[in-house]
Image 1 (cartoon, rainbow, N blue to C red):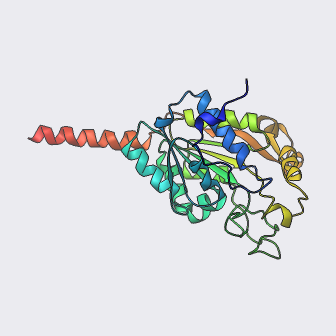
Image 2: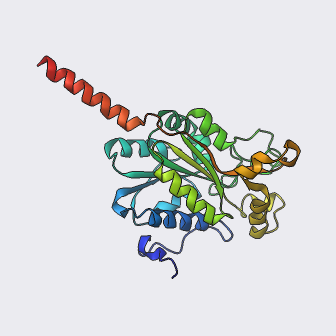
Length: 277
């Protein structure tokens, strides 16, 4: 039986605003399938976004949702998680929103290991605001603010998350949608800060400037570029040139979770105060 997406979508909010060929709709559906697999109550989910193309997603779903300011989604999400630690808090963010304007929130959420799932939609560009280059735009790629080719080295988001202290780091792509469902499920089940980088296609502002003739070409690039991490690790270095691993790239269980640490401190101080009364 076909999956019933309508059960999770707010009435009157579709059609969406994403451009033809954009792959965000694929990720949107993957997220809904993951939530359904986990049998989560919609009222127990808080979905937060900043600004950018990915930020439109919370407007379409019938969860608790919050559309915030550019780069600040993790700050708002941290507040929600601290006030309502029983909720499943998810953040959807673009590469610029998460790692440029929101870069400080990103690294500090990682080091705190707060129990939030962050889905970073990486399309190598600021799509909504005009095609400016972002921290993940590959060197040499063209953007409206890099008309002669990007001269900056680009961030590797999984490595950045791991280095900052995230306890779960994964990478998926819009092309490998079935595998993406599993990554989102595992990330949401993880206790602590989980980061999933999701490679996406922006044919409108990135693809057409960088020799991708069609959205299909961008999907085929994902198919050819991203390999399961297990297979990638077995290849000799010369065979990994131009390739990137996907799947769960790092996972560490049992680390202190921020809300539990905070409320544990509160309980200890209350007990000490009562002892002095």
